[in-house]
Structure formats: structure tokens, C-alpha cells
Length: 441
Image 1 (cartoon, rainbow, N blue to C red):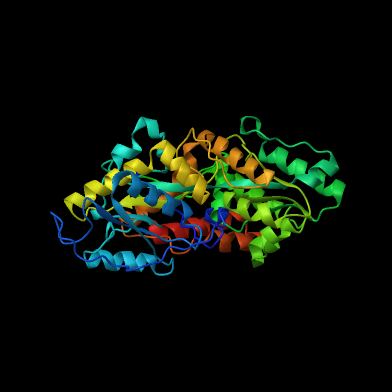
Image 2: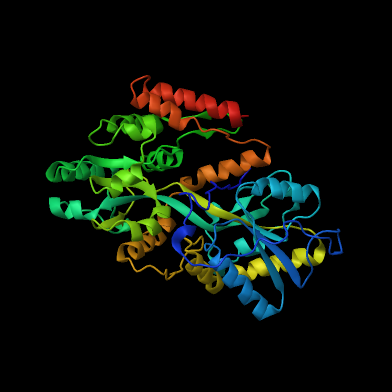
């Protein structure tokens, strides 16, 4: 099955970048279930002139959606009712709506669910339209090639540095993804900066399977992947990369406390006493405001030898086939939404990293570092190896088979390795076993 899923980012958590635009005004939730509208194919859904669109985001971060539905109504006369559903319970509300034959016509969902996946309209005409330049690595398809969803936006892992410390130490760093460094070169440079400036650590690194996957991909590994039979394993490059990572946790290059006891790596970086931080694009907006004691910068992700990241969907935009008129209207609305000029306006207003290439969104940051960071991410993503979207692909495949990775064992098992309780290779064995137990076969 060739599918792409989504690492769900809680809209008030660190996983997404919707906190980019601190605009006021909140969409009133309104009724969560739709009343019957007497469509041509069923008793649920909207009409050719009235659609319902469910999203789930914190107040103020729905700015782009509100702007675009208002513009669409003005241009076409079609009413799009925007319903902002609380994140907690959103999946359950979608399931209940499916069972009650009361799904919205359009939605931005955290993941695909087999309970309602068969109700999705095919978005292939949008995803495959050449002028849209939608990155196909992050489009969700089923085994027949039907396009089930298109990301509203994407997120990616990335590197932040304390620019002030690099400059104080007189150590250079790359600024273009076309001429990036390897992890070996990065660690050497960060250690040099730490030693010359008496910083506490060279690097902090999110306690996150996603961040580890990105590093492993860049070192030529595949991390934990399944074969055609559904059996998971790891390759030699992954074993080498994970052993390297565990070795960095020596309380000099990296603090052990992040992966062993949950210390906050972002707080450590923001203290000004850490050379670099491996996290992701969702930090940019916060750092634009919160870091004032030193200069920071986003820098190109290391490539050793692969230029990659772990890229995920910030949200999955779908249309539901409630009835013929509403389904056609939903597809028409989404087709309009993903026209490059309209989609760029959405990205600018909501602070999205676009899934379409060739755009140049102008974000409302006053911080030059934040503007430069988004420019870097937008330049980098088209260069990333397709492996960057593997986990997205896998998650949707599992979901459509009724499976889910309820708990990724990566953090626990590598924490034990960093603590000296087991080897890195044993940790990988246990991680593979956890994957096989939960989503194998």
C-alpha cells in the first residue's frame, strides 16, 4: 500500500507551526454534527451552495482558514461554515459523525481512520495538477492510487544554533542547503565552539523518535522499516547511526538527562549555554519572541551522505462524499484552495510551511532570524530524499489496516542504552520487537 500518513501535532503543542501568527479572534465552534440536508445520494452533508468544514486548532491559529473561506464565499457565493472542534475528542467526534451519517463536507484531520476512510472523495485531480506543484511524497494514497488527502502544511526536523557562540569562537557554519555539513563536521564544529566559549553542551536533541529518524536518514539508514510481509528490521547504517547517537550522550557533547529523564532540551538551548539544538520548524515562532539574550539561527540539516529530514503533515485535508452535490462542491472548494496564489495566502496567514514547491510566502515576522529560518526550510524541503516521508506513509498504511503504533518504544529503549543498562544494538532489537508486535504483519 502506497500511502502517506501524518504525525499529529497538537495545535497547542510543539509539533506544528500554527503558533506562528498570534492573531486574536476565535471561530465559534457551533454545532458539531450536521443536520440532514436532503442530498441526492444520502441524507447527510451540505449542498452545492453550502458546505461545512471542520478544523481543530487553537484560538487565533485558524486565521488562514477564516480568511480563505470568506474569500471563497465572496468569489463564488458558496457558504463554507468553518467549525473549530477542540483537539481532545476530535477523532471521537469524527467517528461518531461517520456512524451517524453526519460527517462534514471538508475537514483538516489528524489522521485517517478506517471507520470513515471509504467516505473520502478522490483528490487526485488536485494533487496531480502540475501547476499546483504539490510534493507527492506527502500526499496520502491508497493501494489503488486514489488520493485520500493532501497536507494543509508540512513540518520538518531541523537544526538551530547559538549564532553568538559560533561567532565568539570564530567557527564557521553553512547557510545554504546546497552546501551543507555532515554530522561529523557539525559535531566537530559544535564541540570546538563549546570548548572555546565554555558552553555547557555542544548539542541538545529532542527526545523524539522523529528527530532520531531524521538523523538516521541523513546518515544513510532507514531506521525501522517493514518488508513486504510486514516484518520490521533495521539495516547496518541504522545500527551505526544509533550507536553514534548513544555515544554523543556523554554529558559533554550532549546531556544524558534529556533522553534518560525527560529534561527540556529547548529550555537548555534558550538558556544560552548550549551551542546547538536539533528540533524542528515549529520552534521558529516561539524563538522569534522568546530568545533575546543571544542571536540564534536555523542552519541546513547535516547530510552524511543523504540530504533528508523527517517530514510530516501538519494536517490532512480531506473531502467527504456525503451526497453528490456536496461532494462536487467540496472538491471544487479544495481545488480552489490549492491554486498556488490562494494556497500561498493560506500559508502566510496561518504561518504554514507549504506542501507546494515554488512558493515564496511572506510571513509576518519582525525577527530576521525567523524570516531566514522559514526561507531555509522552504529551500531545503525540495532537496530532501523521499525517505523523509516514509513514516508518514507507514502510519496511514497501518491506520487503513486498523493498526496503530500506540507507543513508540524508541525513547524508552534508547534511554536505557544511554544510561548504560543495555547496548544500542539491544535497544534496537527491542524497538523492532515493539514495532512488530503493534503494527507488524
